Structures are given as structure tokens and as C-alpha cells.
Amino acid sequence: MHTRVLIAAALLATAALASCERASAPADAPAPTSTAFSHATTADISGYYMPAEPVSIGKWSLDHLFVGQASEFETWEGGARSDTFAPVMLQFDDATSPMIATELGEAHSVTARVLPTRYAVTDTAVSFEGRSPELGRVRFDGRLDPGALATAKRNLGGDGVVMTGSLTAGDQTVTNVRLRWWMGD
Image (tube, rainbow, N blue to C red; front, side, top):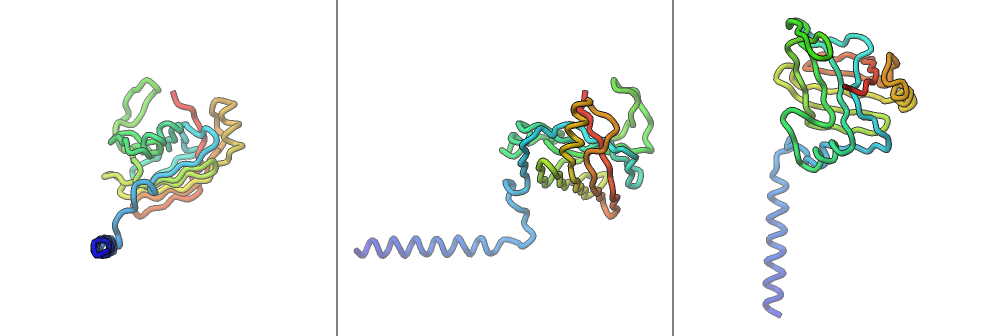
């Protein structure tokens, strides 16, 4: 009986110590990774979302928002991460940089890819936060129109707007960012 009391006291002391350690964590500590990244889609919304009109923040021009396939989300959310690719990311061009020839035509020679520090993706919304040395903190919140996306996919792209949102980089925000869908190369 005396042994059981000692074991119970030891377990209680361990639990109390553990709760003290958790309480001493800084208030601004980052959220656990498992809650920072989430996707809940029932349809395939993958592809490139390109600006219907130019979107500029300083010398930087939004080239596209990329949304990957379900397997890419699962890999990222499972902890396998890349320094150059994510299931949701934004790419910007330095509009002052020289143009170069690529297999897809001409493009700016300097780009900035922004990988996520947080995202939430559903069939009707994309919420993204990231950081880059070139642009600082970047945030995009967009509403996806599933009907317009289905039409764009049937037409293999086009000029129809499928997503509308707001983009913030550093201290500048652009509202009514309108994106069209393209399946990629």
C-alpha cells in the first residue's frame, strides 16, 4: 500500500512539473506544425492561378499562386518539406530585372518564390502566409469559385476569373486580386 502512495505521489509531481514547463513557454511561440498547415478539398483544385490583371507591390509583380495535388499536401503536412517547393506557394517577378528567353517564352530573370509558414486550403478558399527575404511577410486570402474553376478546367484555362482575394507583402496590400486558372505545362 505504501508503494502505491509513493508511485501516485511521484506521478502527480511529474504531471505538475510538466504543466509548469508548458506554462513557461513564450506567448509568441509558433503554433504546432500540424495546425499550421491544413487542406480539406473534395475536388482537384491544383494548378497555377495567374493574375487576370497585373498585381504589383513595389518592384515585384505577382506571377502566380501555385496549388498542388492532394499527394503534395499530404507529403508536406506529414513533415517531408523542401526548401524550394510546397503544395501552396506564390511566385513574384522583379519587374526591373532583364528579360530572358525560356521554353515558355520570355520571363524576368529575377524571381522570388514564397513558401508557406501557414496555409488553409478548401474547395472554396485559399489562405496563405509566408516569408521571403525579398518581400518580407506575405499573405494571400482568396475565395475560389468552384463553378468558374470547373469551366476553366473544361476549357483548359482561359481568361475567366476563378479566384478573388487580397495580397499583402510587407506593409502594402492589394485588394480585389483576380486570378484565372491554368493547368501548367
